[in-house]
Image (cartoon, rainbow, N blue to C red):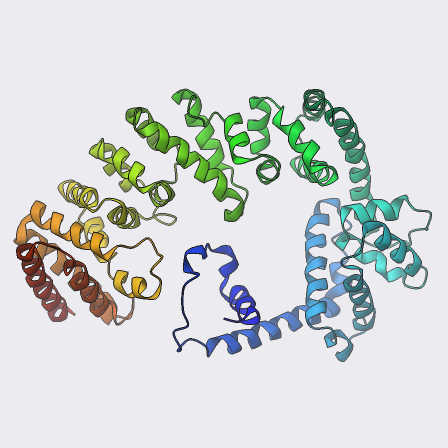
Length: 499
């Protein structure tokens, strides 16, 4: 897709929230272009409607942001409208609503400020305010540094409904700014002294309120990122753990993965009793952005993988006693993950069974393991069957269905048709021809009925058979290959009859 089409698709389908790094080699299929212009047109209409609603309801909206607790929402709301006005510059001028001209002028002025230094922005706003006092309602959209410069100046600030909340916010900026300057003044040359001063401040306010702390650390890092990093690195482990619950993103911005994980006792040397709570905190307190979290999770996976060779029981305990992202571990450290799970099949089965059904469904864990260790995946499926997990066994077999189609489109995906074949061959040895034929037949029948009822893709069964046949074609053992081909044909026949 072109840059414009990527933006439209991202907004329309929410792609910006998904990790698409593995799909960089995906080629245009030639049959999917039509929805993009339609989606772009719909998005454009919706964006213009949001500007219309702003003009139509502006006076009603002004009733709320005077409350301090609504300032951040109002800031985000106004910044969004600035971006919309840039995209649809003439729209507000084209509608006949009383507030539209003033809104168009104010938003256009804010668009023109973008890219300028805070001092320059504040000077331009001060010069514009006497002729356009309506601008005071848009102060929340300004950056923190611009607000500080503006309120520190000599220009009188006109009254406005939103001014109370803005002034209160600026008062907090000034109050925290003094502490930031004090901590940095100590910490630039003596990071430990800066850390002690920062700890004193945090204990004095009892780590509350959380919104204030987030604002403090935003100012702290913006003022001097290098010095802030050195100071935070000197904070003790207990302080870092408390801050992880309040400012997890800011800590990840400030510290490297190695530095943060050391503070959480996620290291090659830490005791298991310390490692478990550290892993729990890291996983349960994400930044909210997978791109930010990924390097820290990768480092955690490396630590567990490195210790798994000599400390398998202890690392399995970590996996069992924490919300450890098993799927990510298998993807990032496939050999180490497979080796660790193979060391205790009972624990491995429980980990699969207890995997989050939404974030990482058990069948997907099996699918990831097929790529890492097909024989282990087959052993787990057999163990699940022995425990009466018939539905999960069927889902695990059906999870392969689109492997060939996906591999053909994106070879870089963590999919192995050869691994699928080895998985089926191992299952054949474990279950026998009749047992595997029964399971595959049930899978074809159940999913065939769902496809017939419109619950899933009508081509599911054909894709499923295509994958299975491609997978067994890689098997070097002619006897096993021919037996599996016969079983697949029978299962597909049963599915067609059942559907």
